[in-house]
Image 1 (cartoon, one colour):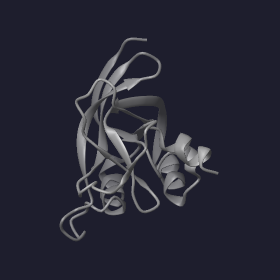
Image 2 (cartoon, one colour):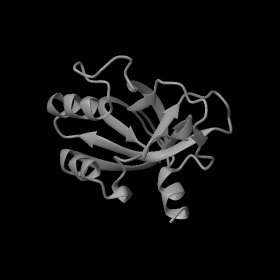
Image 3 (cartoon, one colour):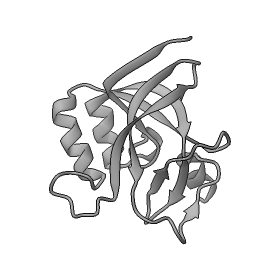
Length: 142
């Protein structure tokens, strides 16, 4: 399927918000949004303190795998999600993450633009998740 969508209600998640993690936050997202499917975007993923963080990459070999959701009510969901990701207005500075729109290559061949949370702090000394897939990394370490 070849389609292009640009909509500010789309969110690309790659870590603890993914359905396969079983976290309370992934359950929140499942209730606040509709799953669109799997996809990937350019980036590098690092293991942080019990969760991953994605940074930008322009390399053709650096990809982060995740899921795309369409928020049912973005007006109420964004403040909650931003607070969880450490970039809400009441969060301490510097923010841990920032939300940016990125192109997502969907597994079904489509492409869309979605919001994603990018890690803002220093990654020195952090372990890179080589696969770019957080679910794969947590399941392989069990």
